[in-house]
Amino acid sequence: MSSGRTVLGMPRIPRSVDPETGLPDTTGRPDDPGLVDRFGRHAIDLRISLTDFCNLRCTYCMPAEGLDFLRGDKLMSVEEITRLVRIAVHEFGVEQVRFTGGEPLTRKDLPEILRSVSQISPKPDISVTTNAIGLEVRAAELKEAGLDRINVSLDSVVSETFETITRRPLLHRVIEGVDGAAAAGLNPVKINAVLMPGVNDHEAADLLTWCLDRGYQLRFIEQMPLDAGHSWNRSSMLTAADIMGLLSERYTLRPDEQPRNGAPAELFRVYPRGSAECLGKVGIIASVTRPFCADCTRTRLTAEGRVRTCLFSRDETDLLTPMRSGASDAEVADIWRAAQWGKQAGHGMDRPDFVQPDRPMSAIGG
Image (cartoon, rainbow, N blue to C red; front, side, top):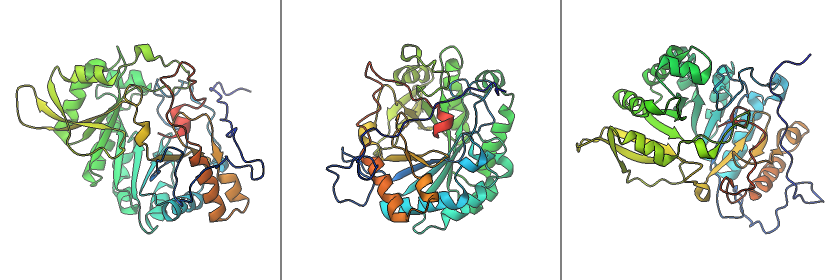
């Protein structure tokens, strides 16, 4: 009997492969141990999805009925996650690891994952992107286990709007989690927000005020074509320019002087209109209208151990199957290097032939 949930097709393996090895073609790749691509970019930031399951149903990410989520045996284990991070750190020089989902807090073994990864030397910077539900009772344990930072997805602090977006009346749980993270010392607490026209765009300045008052760092993210229903429309999305216009009704934004260094967010210093007192910073992640692909330093692993070189890639390269079949660390590293070498110059959203990935954000890992 059908579950009633949306079923997603699996991404294809790369078409351009070496006929002898079956790996992505690495013709012309320099003798470099790192994760490099044809455009001279080095990946030192690893994003790992721990699960595709989430306890919210955000309209821009997941259908109301949910998805056909991965079974437990399809997910990477603590040992497999640790091994892949160790390869990334030792073989490629990866410096940052962010655990994502779905919702990573739904993995009961998250403290064990953090503790194991934090014992790798040199220890990478470890962060988690979460909806913060239940974080207030777990934050101290996660910090003790090795977590350095937290990013919380929160699109509104108005209960009615939050429920419209997430289809769940759980705003109070999220705020408790955010405050719990700050109390546990998981600072700076970063808030990620997606604005949608007619839904929460009128709350942009209020959300920034809420974050500034509490010392949280807000990041507005342009809505991307990563929804399960493929209903995204570039013509109706709020752009970075739109977001700045909404904020300018209350605040003056001035570009931050610190170098961006490949970070997704363009940072601005925030001032009350007519005042020279800086209240803090706000970031705008303009993946659609101001793409930063040329400076990308990221590589990604899905919850079932597949390399995705870009959020919008339509190809994936399997690491988990070879690893479970007895491949050595060196062999796994070579497969990963080959996959990264095939990374495209950009996501291609500006091209008329752009095709949205089959998987939504929850199944890829943000």
